[in-house]
Image 1 (cartoon, rainbow, N blue to C red):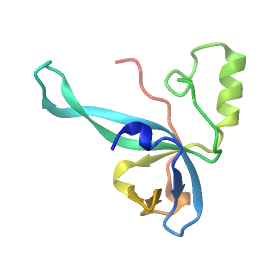
Image 2 (tube, one colour):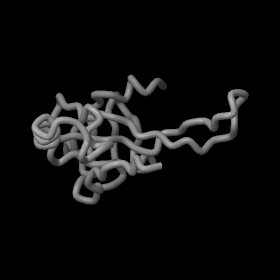
Image 3 (spheres, rainbow, N blue to C red):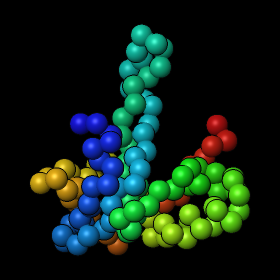
Image 4 (cartoon, rainbow, N blue to C red):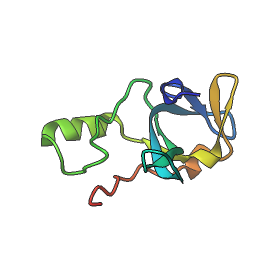
Length: 115
């Protein structure tokens, strides 16, 4: 499956209630080294927004980056966005079904970009 096939998919929690739509995917680089010397990437989790149309435009990566007014507008539009660990997700019938209730989903935290 390609990452682009996850984008926009509807996410349902363990009770079948709509939790939102996938607006981004977080990857982690921890696989075996390749010929290029870089480790393979794997999906760490999904970023799910309650809105059907939403993009974070990178503002979740740097909480103080970019024009303040645009950052505030983007983050306000995507209020309620959560992080879904990949282990909690299962693809069935064209939707992503979670093994946990929506109330257990952790809020989206900014990435640590200091490294």
